[in-house]
Length: 354
Ligand SMILES: Cc1cc2nc3c(=O)[nH]c(=O)nc-3n(C[C@H](O)[C@H](O)[C@H](O)COP(=O)(O)O)c2cc1C
Image 1 (tube, helix red, strand yellow):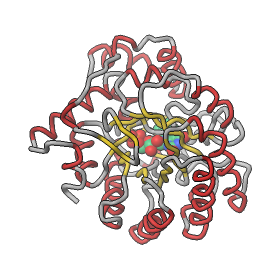
Image 2 (cartoon, protein in one colour):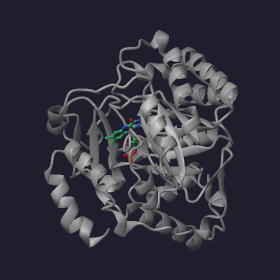
Image 3 (cartoon, helix red, strand yellow):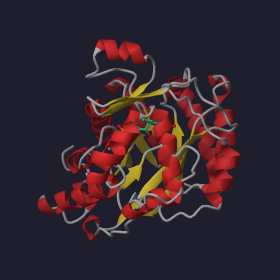
Image 4 (tube, protein in one colour):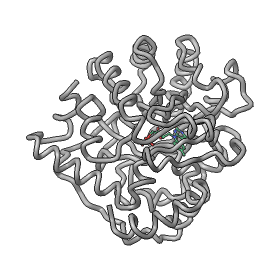
């Protein structure tokens, strides 16, 4: 971790309310203040990284929710991310939940958020992305508007997909945020089939792009298997595992109670996300590309996800705690680990411990 981040910038940022700090961070990125951390390091150690028909410069991505409105794609990619997932984007703009709605738990190196899909809406975000500088793969994560009941969710998602399709390299269907009431119920078999079939049909009509599904870490083994089977059956291109948890592992009761509802991310989430990645990898015999996300703070963490079956990884909380040099450090560290362990490419390591 850089001296500047650990001793100067982070202490200042962490004294601010977490959402304010995030806005300040975004403003700094847009103003080019992170330029000293820009780099375009190439990693030959990974070999070619082709996933669902797209070529990735490196396997470390920025998870959904950091740049919800796709405002800083250029600067973020310049920090060394191999891909960025913008959103969650909803068809209509919406303000999200009341503040405060984002909290740090520094002792646990975790975050709790109940933002509730605050975003500028599909049309505005797609328009911005189409004219943005982009030097990495950009996915768009889509969700449903809060006021839309689950019975009408499919139509709402399809309209959102149509609005963002042109601007996205890939699209992720978010059915796992805990902060939109009943959204996670869309992971149930009948609802999921209806939703994904509708989305796949629209996707094919518009010119097929990779369609991924993002799942929750709070699923039991029996719940994961049917989801994986449905995704394979419908021809989904990849699964993002996982979103935040509604449980509070490692958080004392008092703190949990004080903060209240929301999704927990960061270090305490890792074992849960890893277990889901492993379960999906096994169920799909390693044939479904998995994007592993949840509590990745070090190259060793990233390697654990890769060896459990993830073929790409994403970070959010690790970036908040680790700062602007984090994506590059994670990438170089992971590349070094592959070499040390005798893997000639990233692909050789995927699922090697599953
Ligand atoms: C403040 C915050 C906002 C988030 N917003 C979204 C979102 O809009 N859509 C989504 O799919 N995931 C969202 N996430 C979840 C992350 O993409 C990621 O799945 C999760 O935080 C686990 O990764 P991490 O432990 O590296 O943070 C959000 C996470 C945080 C901390």
